[in-house]
Length: 201
Image (tube, one colour):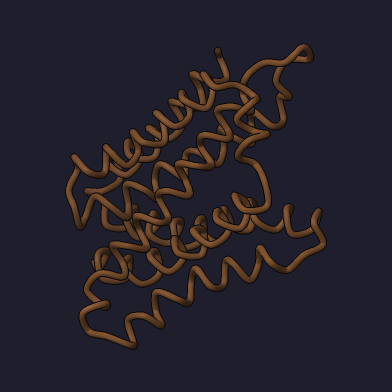
């Protein structure tokens, strides 16, 4: 339960950090730069180990498609241009929710307990996840929806923990991995496209 509590607290730290630094221009620029770095790093962290283990480029291709397709859709139609960022953000958030569900299930103690390195890795990357969600949603949609976005991660974690390790076997497969890769790419698109417009100083 200690690891679960910490995993629930970590995403909340991101918005708190955003709020503390938001009134300081230099700090805000630092946060912006951090997000631009953190998202590709998080994507690489999630995707590259799977690609290496599977000896397959499919996950890498899925990331590329997730990043490129929204931009391609924007070039095809002015109507689509107004909605691609919103759709990419929703798709990206759904991938984070799925990942949080799997992490919650993986935090269920087994006979050997929960591996400390794994738990620490979960905690460390969840702080920037919370920050990125708030950074993307708060300027455009307000604090209420941003809080709902972060809250969805917490709910998915609790749900995954309550379902236990059975959910890992039922969801954690090639299809889920490719979906997470695709939505990770869509998050990269949103950060570098929407973020430029919403975070000008």
